[in-house]
Image (spheres, rainbow, N blue to C red):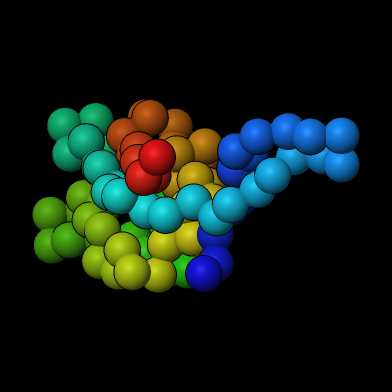
Length: 84
């Protein structure tokens, strides 16, 4: 499985890590201005624009949970939710 790792516990040897698993990507269409910054920064081409120039999640199966779409969106319109 690919994706970011999250710490699940600590020991003297260091952190115990496990991969994150995507639960959902939410795009707030009211906040999205269609600038495409999230599309540009997504390394796996998960996001695309729809005919109304808004961002949609086209390929969620490719998401690695890197959260670059969240970090780069100037409108804070995207949210990556991972399983706990």
